[in-house]
Length: 611
Ligand code: AGP
View 1 (tube, protein in one colour):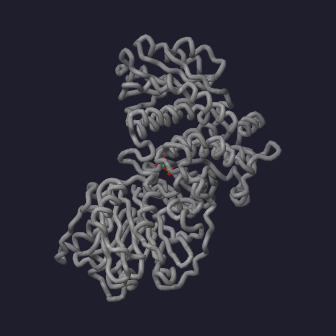
View 2 (cartoon, protein in one colour; view 1 turned 45 degrees about the horizontal axis):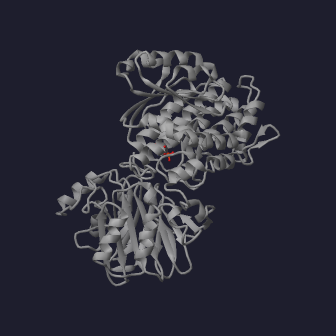
View 3 (cartoon, protein in one colour; view 1 turned 30 degrees about the vertical axis):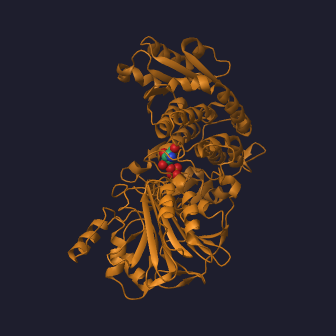
């Protein structure tokens, strides 16, 4: 998703803006630009492509040096990636300069009105209506003009604005789209997320809805839209620079895969005591509601978060005697069953900013549901709007492909399941001892799996060699895992990987099984293995090339497949975490061996703040 940075202070802004944009690269983008002011004039430079292209352009043909500026990386949503469509965008007379993240939902009608006024639009973007509206409603006072225009804009958006007649001031707005102010020593910073601020400051303030931030070299002020001063409650960033450095890794994706023993331990920290799960941040939920108040659990998420939600559903419905449904967020927002205060809605989102999931959360709240956000970002919009929050504590995940987020989400969902069932008479009699012991040992099992998989990855990765199409199959939790494995291969290796419930292949897809076609069979659920072996045999009779992923000690699968990858055995509910490791590493190697930038896959973004 696009990224915004801003700087004002006693240093040259250009280097800080470029460095900040580089720290936001992981969000995904296809063009970049900056506007710099020397407090007399403002100059802009924009380039299609990577930030390096912008840097090269600035070296070849420098713009003015100034100590104030804004920058932007654009992930194209309206209008193709091009210099013309990249930000900052300005009005016809070059008075206002705007960078924007998110969507102006009513931009078509706004554009129509401006065209009727004679405005000559230069781009296909929704953003361009903003500088033209500022010019149209210009009162001569910068802040007042912004106040006039903001109520006209519908949608979720973050903006940073500069004005040629106020060259010492940046105005910033965050309307359900993250934008954070950073406080330095006589310096002010702006960024879409804290990874761009960490090199400069740990003191931040996330701008809230209906607030306006003004940054000048003298001070940073925050006001409400109506002009009420806000005294920003500064917060300290817990992350360290170390957590967002690449260290010896080539890509963040590999670093984050390898971190999973540590991040799962962090997710579990403080949650299991004396064979009991304690989740302090959710105690108020159970003080407010007895668990039997709920008649249904709905889990919503997108992409990998949807897949971890599917794992959560399967575990919860084993333990609870109420229906558990999992929804793709973008579907739930518009189509859902009956909702009421009796629904417990769990929103899964690593970034806490995914527009589809934010909409789903608002729809749940509109229907009086009780909502829990399971997220990695505690100051995100989804975390703020949900009634309760459970943090995954996986630390910053900078690769577009979710890996540690997935395993920490499943860990959190299992902790939540046990926590709720400890306080309920609506559960099947279930002895948690084994599951709790398995959770405690999980980081070590994941560590072991990383070692075993890395030793075997060369032969395992051959399943994708010279292939553009690939099938993954499984039963039960292995089917859900197959969906996640397919998504990883699509995302970072651009392979057309499809996942099927193993028993379903014969109902049509078998027509695509030709000699040599690669199939990964996930066989970690011992109680389903017998039927899975039969499904593998069906594939083998069509001469598919089948690689089995199964647990150490299982011979049944090894005897029927062409190749087998053994991983350690854990509790069946935890196997979607353990078996995710080889699939994550497979996608990583398949993508890198094809020469792709697995951290920033084409067309993708880390947080989709547009619906
Ligand atoms: C997963 O690898 C992708 N990056 C994507 O599917 C992601 O899971 C989805 O966009 C949801 O993001 P969120 O968890 O931040 O809401």
